[in-house]
Image (cartoon, rainbow, N blue to C red; front, side, top):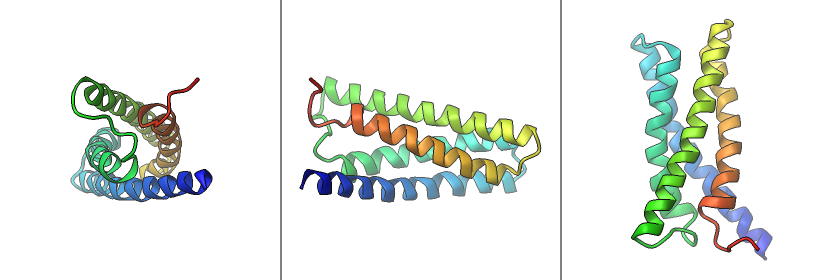
Length: 135
């Protein structure tokens, strides 16, 4: 039963990630279309996706693990932002490096999405929104 609950959280997280990704990719592609260089476009898109992801994660995914208002909630938001910044750094470096060697930025972004998703899911599930304290 616990395994099934974990799977449901993963499904909700995946859906939240898809919606945040829509914000991210929509912004990224719009900025590319407007002539922005790939690296800053990736950073801005990812940053907008961070905001969308916090709203979805804290309200629809990790509802049991969201801290109450006050210092713990502030700490949790800070940790969420730090995990997102790690994802942003991964995304920016992957897109920047791949573009530099001639790989299409859209393909590089897809690679970055998979990498960032995996890293942030593990951090958020295990540390940021955990419902039990590790022993």
